Length: 208
Image (cartoon, rainbow, N blue to C red; front, side, top):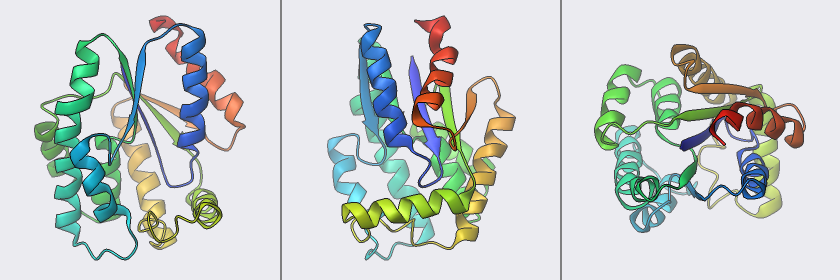
């Protein structure tokens, strides 16, 4: 089972994944938690180039750095875990690139779909949980978190973008969820973390 967690900045993905892990441990599920960018050795070198607010990266370079990270991540981490019979829980995946670089940066989503299909060797998630909430709420949360944790510079490049950018990303995620309803599960991220995870577990019960 390949699960991905998506959402705008500040949607609460990390908190959600932590609580989801707790529920899966209780049920005896063997799983691997990973993330993008940075879920493999190469990705850990690429991550600072993509997220550091001091980096000046062109839109196309940004895209291909994400794709390089993803291709290696699938080869080194995700496919081997799935082949071992583990569940994989991934914090961001190809839908993020299509939402951020496509809807956010104005690139062609259909071309990005093809590029991601090529980079991943056609590996798409079984279920994608989309944590959805208004962009202004998420951005406010993300900026407060970065300030609190000292990440404004080291991982704050996307949070520094204008609100309109984040609104386009939210629209992109929702457009993808509408296009692939069999894969996406949209969760209201304005709820309490426990309520969100409870809803997610209802969707996962048939697979446990």
